[in-house]
Length: 571
Image (cartoon, rainbow, N blue to C red; front, side, top):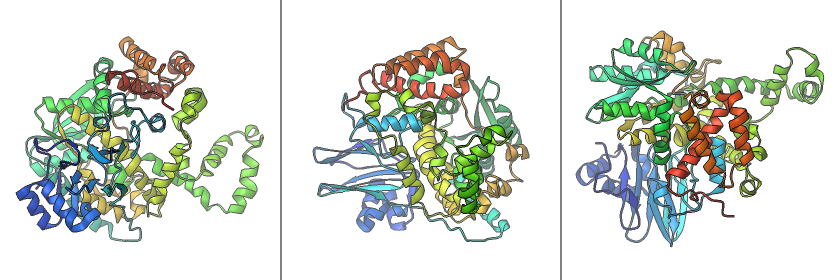
């Protein structure tokens, strides 16, 4: 049985009511039977009485639950990837809970400067912070217990990587293919199910499996752009022909952005700066208009099976650690770092750059080219705003996450890191937000619990074989997917915003109007905004367009909330 929120169950909870959200099931037959006969809240209450804060351990799928007991004790929890969101606040001695942070915020609520700094740094606000002071989002795989006036927040789930298990690849392939099929089958919730199709490995796999398990051509939806280097529609068409799907194409235009950006920005409970949300919205919108009631996304394949290019890149840098320390510190670094020698020898600059990056420990190394810090904090942000934040906190929280995993292999440590910062805090809110705005349900078959468990026990060398990304995934599906898709480079729904904003008058004006709202907020320096638009953007639209985008979405969020002083600096 799938548990969903009925119309009578509230989206906002106080001490007088409870709710559960999501498509999930109980592993324990007793609790599943209660869910079938009495509803999801009753089953969760029984599980909580039986197992306490471990109640979520017996639940599979995506969920957010809030239980309030008559004596004042409260329990909330979210699934392993926070596909479902839950926010909380303690006010007047009560725990208040809602799916959205802005549902808990009073009119004119003060913002959290550190959360805004996080947004400019990450282009989203990682849990547990939200943009509002005193309002928090429960991190993925966590629970919170409020009892006797005390709040305890802790993980109910942490992954355990098994890195020394050696199984014949042939056996693994058979198991993996069946798990994929089962995961897609379980995502069929009735009605008409379609899928996103970018032409990448993950979305193509889902499209093919949807055809396989239903016996019918899948409804697949793709987005294109009339911009050189950004359009991948040919790969989507290739996958569509290969699997015989009903292919629906839509080309996003600059005019589409002008129409939709205010609505997309306002649909989130706080600033959200992933530019792929707009094409994802148009893709979901096209599906809804075609009569599809549920759409499947391919998110998670890269993060479970080693598909992001940075995994190989960091393995290259990690090789530096295997050079004897006496050679590194006694010869290479003194010779190449901080001397004039590199400038005198052609081609040596790459070696210097390699050493400079390799010397920085993980996960700090991944942020060496962070856009905000590369532009310069004092160049971008006002002194008043900088005085209220701790820039070093971004690295503190990343180190804490990276080091909390139990994997030893570099790729597994990076996967665990990405389960938070790439999936739970970024890509999943992007897709869930886009589909919610389009009024269509969404499922993530590649994040199925069984596939997650398979990933945890898969030999890390099969995820990243040498420098070959997601080797096992591609090897297992090489007779299923078109070879061109197996070998293509990862791209996704990249948006040519920077290219368009310098050419399209309406989009440029929207960006200018959005950025002008930030001038009175005391966050971004006015002179930086002037340089960004007049000098930097025309010279390098692809690079500086990203900063324009995240500032524009912040400005739009402020504007569409109806109160330009909604975000304000209050020391």
